[in-house]
Amino acid sequence: MAKILGVGNAVLDLILTVPCYPKEDEELRIINKNYRSGGNVNNFLYVLSQLGHKSSIVTTIANDSSAKQIMAELDTRNINTSNVQRFIQGQTPTSYIMLSEETGSRTITHFRDLPELSFEHFAKIAVEEYDWIHFEARNTKNLQGMINIAKTFLTAQPISLEVEKNRAEIEEIIPLASLVIFSHHYAKQTGYKNAVELLKKMRSIAPQSKLVCTWGVQGAWYCEANEEIKHQPTEKTPNTIDTLGAGDTFNAGLINALIQKKTLAEAIASASKLAALKCQKTGLDNLLTKVIEKQPLANTEQLTNSKATIVPCSDLSHSVILIKYDTEIKAYLNNCPHQDVPLNEAYKIDVNPFEKTLKCSVHDAFFKIDDGNCIEGPCINEELKTVAIDIDDDGNIFLA
Ligand code: FES
Image (cartoon, rainbow, N blue to C red; front, side, top):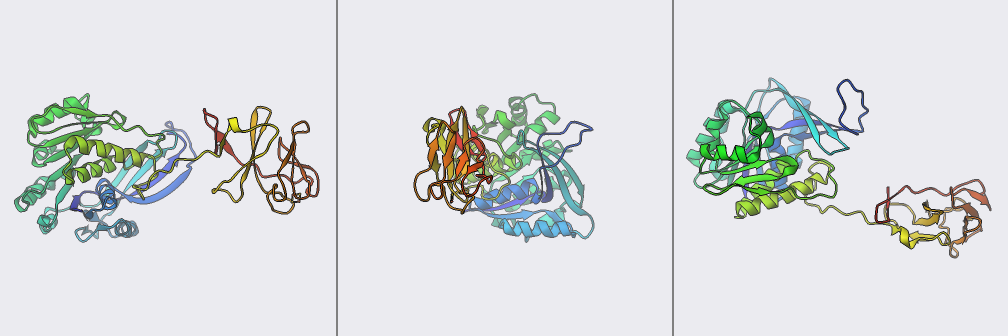
């Protein structure tokens, strides 16, 4: 476990989940609206907290109700807030984020009206108590002074720098860090066609630093001082749900692995795995909880037109009746509308493949396999509840 100091932004994220990204001048209904605290360094430290490290944030905080929410969430995220700089003037920075359900990608617009962290505030922090100092490359007016003063107090503790956007005088700050992580946004903004081109140039600026450039789904490129540039492809994920915070997760995974004395190549591989895990989950909570793969209820090969197959289902109140109907698969909740009991309570469910009916074993109600409607018996005209299912290309049947 290491003590990590992160210097950067804590913001409020307003996340609007939409079915797909809208065209200009289009109207679109939002599927879900969600407020949570965000900002690169905030997310980065939250992941490190979940990896077992002691995280502390250095950021500016306003005095409005959104700021209270951010402070409460930092507390819940186990991020120490004793080094935040409070301001009476200004409002909480807010990111308005559109998250596309179709692709899992996000588009961000940002509002900021809060003073930046002052050099004087940072200079009072006992940085020597920390094992790793991480800076977001923003607030460049004060950043160079902050890194320089930190270096005078640190002995061997690494300093990392995340360069996400092009900012004034950034190239003078880059060589001050022992690890620099560039985003492809920065590379594109500054006119580089690819990560290799960027890293070649940056190596001439910061020859002693470890350099990394992430490029979305194409993966990450990296190099140690005096070593060639290498590539780590992106980890394959079965389904991408939410990429918001994936970059921050990658950075946290990278630093976590380097703290454990892994090589840069091993650390990049480990960070890619963690980022891939994040993309399969919404948000950053319980990041390390294993993604549970959906278990199929059954396979179509197991089903026939002449027999009702009953499968237990922990996600529903009752088991599920599966049966073939012509070439279709029908699924009903195993619960008779007559007396709220399973259809096989007394005996098995009899199926008549010619009449295309199935019979409740308790009081002999007959239900049409086609639509679950009762056509004879004590609950005539009532119906079995349909269970929505999905069937994959291999014939596996899942709850929809
Ligand atoms: S419980 Fe099913 S018919 Fe009575």
